[in-house]
Image (cartoon, rainbow, N blue to C red; front, side):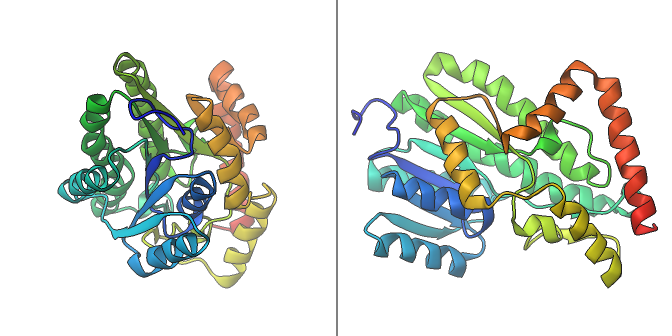
Length: 287
């Protein structure tokens, strides 16, 4: 166990995970607890979060579930304050809660844009603002934001999702450079396809703006399966190894780095590949 004035990796640490009731968030919470963290599971789905927390506690580790809407800054601020009061510290804050909106932009209303920006971007900002000064006062801490490979490359068909994830990547990179002088670490997860509810229509609180037929839905899942979605528990195990090493941009599965590198080195080619991929999808789905 580390000292009281430095970050603990991970034994004896305190971690807050938003969106922790399911998917990547749940897997992170369970993996963190196995590594010796006391975990706070923050989620709107409080019954599911309590179920996960109970499972962690039954196994002999420590967890607490809290009902949280990440669009409510005051609630996140209170969560951080109460966590520090109870445990004496907060080593990790995982801004993981997020939604997807499936459909092309011609199907959007402005309310759809506002909704996804509120959750995926402002939710992350709220988490950062709630915990950042606390970590500065401690002299240590690690903020980990969940973006996506959609934040590293153009993603037609998921334009609003990609917009928010690009913003989260940019936020994380800039904050990492700024926060280092205060002893604070910042990383960003950029998952490829992970087997979560977002793959099946934006998640519990996401939206599908196109009324897909059963046959179209079947074709969509067939296309998704070609990318071999990773089990979230495997993702959590691999991603946390990179968190322990204080990696800045964490791309898992690692083979997705090929697409990232193409878009960094040859952005025009990356754009053309995205365009062709979307046109092929239009033909297969007939829309």
